[in-house]
Image 1 (cartoon, rainbow, N blue to C red):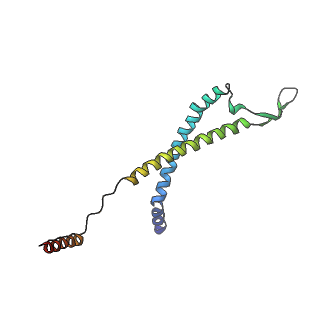
Image 2 (image 1 turned 60 degrees about the vertical axis):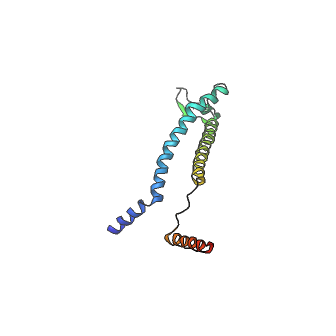
Length: 143
């Protein structure tokens, strides 16, 4: 049992697993932000542009509900809810665009880090000694 727990600890503490967990948590929070962007900002503007059409309520009745003489529902209506489908397509496009922009920003920052000039490494003691010997020999040849 001890080896099992040790193996599990080694697995759980690997960088990839921890990075994935952080990504899932951040992704969940990012999903809430994008959902709010879609529902609270984008959809009211789209609804205003389309004449206050609420996409969620758009549907086509394939079979209406049937009621008995007392007014109780015998069979439910069958609806083709295409408005929700349009809403999900719009959500997907906005989410994909937000992720695209986030990746572009991250890539831009990584390029700036990569473009930063890296100072050349200091010469080793052997290289310094050889340089001194070279300089001494050049000085002797000039005299």
